Length: 319
Image 1 (tube, rainbow, N blue to C red):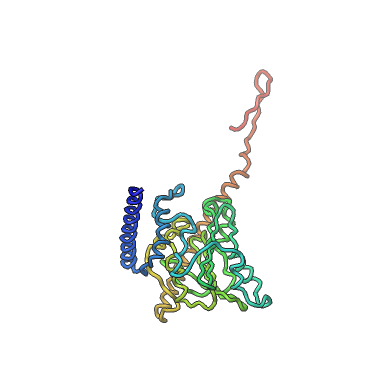
Image 2: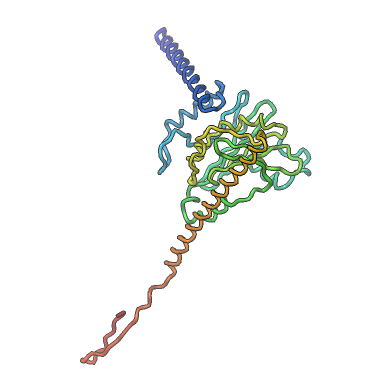
């Protein structure tokens, strides 16, 4: 009995020592990368992601990385004092107008959809609720299947995703590691702030937060997003997305920096739009060429006949 107790104590002390050393290394790495040093609670939350990512096998055709491959593991780590759980539909009720008559129908439909975990066919969807007392934040991510972006039959849906227009006016909110996040200008008396971003048009992210929360209070829910992992998980990847540890809060920029940011975002958006349009056109032409080849009848062969000296008529096809 004493022997087993001694082994247990030794293992506990060893694990505690390892966690202490690894936690200090994690804080030093964050400082070197100009990221906020994680609290011990955040470190423990990230530890699971790191462990899973080390043993996860890469998807077929994908190079091995240290990035998490599960969509839920790409979410932000809960800030200090916040708990996280699976979302239930009722979690979004507090984001709607108090008076049902004040709810904009389209905004209500969108908010209620965010509270549901319905996933596209062959895709995946994750919805989590971050909770602290009476405060709630709902984050949803949807990943569409690769086939939409790699197969001809997915072209209509691919076009729809890549050219979709926002339902409401948007304003620039944040750039986290190269990923631009916009805020929806919700109509009516909705009690919510709604943020949206997409990665390669294949992963969509929505964040529902109380209207009273400031930009500064919301920052912790974005700064630990695994942008590099999301970029690695889509077909239409953007080089370097997620690799630069820079976070830009647009509302904090001065006029000069704001103009530079907007110009850069517009240029990147124009390049992305043009590249995607070219890819869709090339795929459309390839599909059409294939259809034309199948629809073209065989070349008509000329038939010629000649009567031989024996009086027998003989015919042949072609020259």
